[in-house]
Image 1 (tube, rainbow over the protein chains, first blue to last red):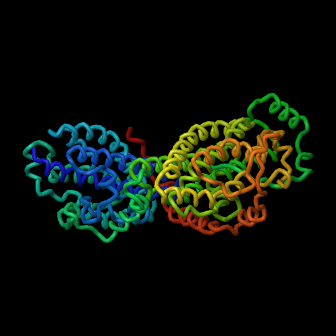
Image 2 (tube, helix red, strand yellow):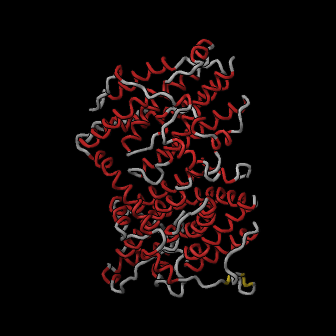
Image 3 (cartoon, rainbow over the protein chains, first blue to last red):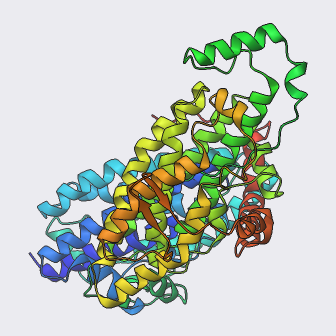
Length: 251
Length: 328
């Protein structure tokens, strides 16, 4: 089994979970209602926790300690999609991102629970259980706000149009893609994307929102290969501000 | 967190004269017997009003208190701290939800309470008008401000109003974890590297005066609260809470090699009480009345959050919205 291929897969997923978890946590104290403040914090905790577990598998494969990996790398060493690093914006953008991302993640971890790489398969079983609730939360809100007032519908529509090219960036293929598929480690981004399109279309069709024409979207790629927007480095600088005061200290 | 040092209105002597004397006597007898008053029970207007005020202030303190600590979530050093602080601050927001629900049982809607908070009409715990400059400040809050709140809340959980007592019992159970988390963080800083130790000591120096203010003005000068004690709205005086806090936590702070910036602070072994430099109550009044380092910022942040979220709340009320049943 090619360890580099597995590491590449683990890194992109761990980095996605860490960065979006961090973004979700930024809602703490600012939610549109207390219940949403609490919900975004729960999802943030799950996602950061999931990233930690994924970094632990990487650690077992010879990578550095999870704290070092998460808190000491620069933006160009991160493999997350650009989608997750975008600022939260208003609640409509955060909600749309949450919906598009978690719909994909639920399918991703369902697929990975069958992975031939056992440590990942075991972890994926746990993660898909948590992500199921994230996905349910997103669907309830999309259906509710996507059919409510003119303002809520037009806000969600605007964010959906803006988010789609970035969401497609989630499925950027790895240079090891075929190998991962052939060895049964991961069924691949294209397979995931097809299922994701169906799942998102189904939910959106129950609202007054319109999905942009999927065929004409130009995906925003680059994140999986270390190319990021100007938003990632400041996020990382903030995240590591205290840790870097003394990375060898016990905090 | 975070309730402590509630501010009560001066009560009019005539207020009770307007109540039905028979019902009032029954009400007081129930409280004397240690019974809980429930939302649908008869209660004097004054009792209702003071309780709303106290529970509301407590709820506000939770959401405003989430701001100085919340700002350190994105900067917490390492996975363990990051996850713990997120969960801790989330608890505080949950406490606000619980407390607003308890206050709603007395007839004031949550929306109205939040409106009164952002208009400046309602107060919240004064200590959150001070900034958390460093990670160590957030650790001080998690340990010692929460400790102070537990002293106050444990006392009040034995009070007479059922919904508030039940909310407080649950809150205290969660707070005890916050306290452990905060203590763990402070131990690591106070026994860590030179930079960490200095950071922690500086935080203690900054937060000691607000901490002494936390329990409210000295009994000698605070608003007369005899009737609130009799009705078991307020269960311990400000000075009693302060003494209990000092007794429990000063030794623990000293044990870590930290110093407290009050050279007069010592326990009088003969009387069993702590002696200290009288806190500056003029500063306390000035800050609680709006002129503290962060009052404007805290309310502005809360107001912005309310405004940015208004369309979401309106959409939830929209008549054409379909009710979506939970998926599981």
